[in-house]
Image (cartoon, rainbow, N blue to C red; front, top):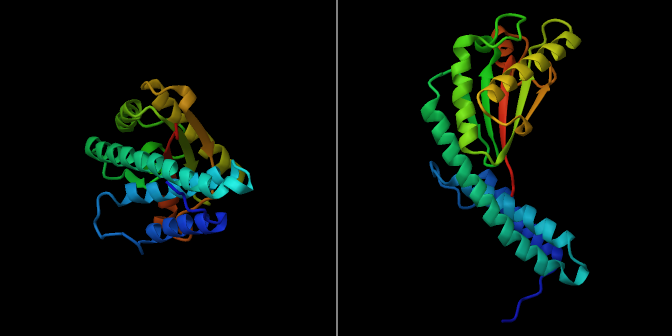
Length: 224
């Protein structure tokens, strides 16, 4: 079989353009398609694989390496996307708290818990009734062990920035400890505090401040 030699720029531009278009819904995206996130993950993986494959070879072989990398990366990305879809569905089925939101970006899951339901004011102790929901998340994480888990605390802008940073760190550690105490390996979990630096809503209203006070559990699948 004769393999057509393509310039590296053409290979990468084609793969990455397809990835971008698919993510934006311009190519192959069907409204309500349950497999769309898996497809997006496959395209992202293909783009990353093409780039890594090209960078690993000399100038003469970069086009071929990019194509091979795209195929391998696409397969890995599709597998990750499918696994995340399953994990998301199982989390939604097992979590009974309407205040907990789950976002599937195609390459990670983000479980967002409002701090107002997790903690009393100025406290870093997780409320006993919410530990059950965290136990549910912990069991799901154990069922899908091939991931890194980031627990990230956020606050609104009320009070001193230094205090908010400290509070967000303490609350992130508290949630991480509940997950660990429910059987999740400590080596998988990273806890961070972001204080008031990453709002998702305006801090000019009570509703916006409530949205900004949150803990995010970010589930990042391992590539291998």
